[in-house]
Image (cartoon, rainbow, N blue to C red; front, side):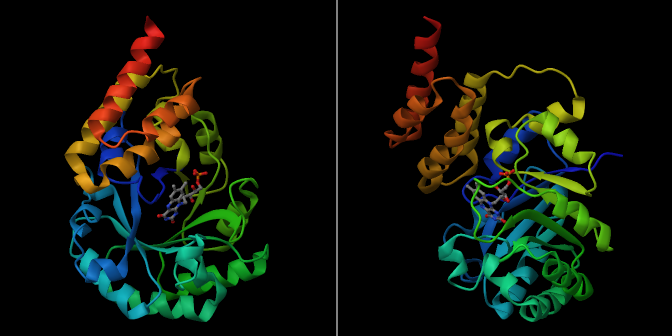
Length: 307
Ligand SMILES: Cc1cc2nc3c(=O)[nH]c(=O)nc-3n(C[C@H](O)[C@H](O)[C@H](O)COP(=O)(O)O)c2cc1C
């Protein structure tokens, strides 16, 4: 059995429109939502209903929570527990300074005790699979990572996803998958690996390596067919123009108008990398202020290319 394939949580990207698009191509085994602010969820903010949409496959859907206050995160987990989903994930890996400064995301990795107490508080609030996504830690110290993860395991976490970079590392340094294998070897719970899967071949290679699941982020935005292509292990020539148009259609259907432009820019920022003149096209698309304008520029680009 090969390890299952997960879509990574990505802010402003891992929303319903992308999931629908991935499903169009055959889907993946599990969809992590973009991070949901525990505080905003409890405050019932105007956009929360979009964040808690677990369609099209609630049975494969994992809500990811981000926050710094254990009481707030526990109450938010109780709210999500009542929705249709497969699991709840706590973000302990986000290294964005704005998030870390509030004590959320990777800031949790600074203290094993605090992280363990958080999980002990959240655990009784949900019967769903409780998971944590994290990084190696602030330093490259496997002993610390192992103690951290064992504490989470003892407190009731059922799955850990390791994005094997340190907190301060950006994407330039490659993900160190050997940490995924080391961690899997030591923990009783499953360990998913994540980082730098760039093609269906990479995905298959990682799925055959010592890990319990492979999570894909950026490459699944550039190639929403990556999971299906890896699963079927056959050549596949996507229609880039039509896939872009389909995404725009899904975006209009499943995201609020206030999100359309930011989410379109995010998506095309990766999707245009399929094209030789992708950066040029990205610049043109980024000048547009409506989905209609984006669609027009997108279609003109292909019409010019084929004339
Ligand atoms: C635009 C963007 C947004 C992200 N947002 C989140 C997030 O909300 N929660 C999270 O745990 N990780 C987030 N990440 C990290 C990804 O889940 C993943 O760990 C990282 O991109 C490495 O995987 P990849 O090489 O397959 O992209 C984000 C990454 C990107 C590029």
